[in-house]
Length: 161
Image (tube, rainbow, N blue to C red; front, side, top):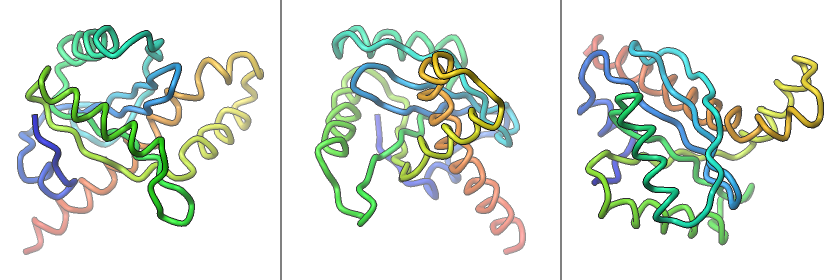
C-alpha cells in the first residue's frame, strides 16, 4: 500500500475506477463512494469502530464489494494548519493499513467538512437524531467530493497540455 498525493493518484487511476472517501472518527468511520466517472460522491452507511483489526476487515470488505481503487481519507488539520492528535491517529491508521492492503491512501485536508455536512443536513431538514447517524458519511462525501473536483481539474489541465 502506498500513500499518494492527489496528483500521483490522477496519474495512476484507470478509466471507470471508483474511489472511496473516509472520515475517520473515534467511534465511527464515515464512508462515501464515487461514481465510475468520478464526478459525484455519495454517502454510504457508517462503520462502527470496534478495534483496528475488525475495522480494517470491514473496510476492506467494503472496498472489495464496491471495487474501490483508492481511499481518500480526511486529515483533520487544526484551523491554523498545525497537526494535532487526530492527525497523528489518522496517519497511524493508514500506516497500519499498509500491512493489510495494496490500495493507495490519499490524505485530504478535511477542515470544515463536518461543518459543511451539518449545514447540508440542516438544509434538508434532517432531524437531530438522524443527523447524528449520517454526519460522518456526509463529511466523508464532502472530503471525497473535494478530491474528485481536484481530480477533474487535474484531468482538464492534462488534456490542455
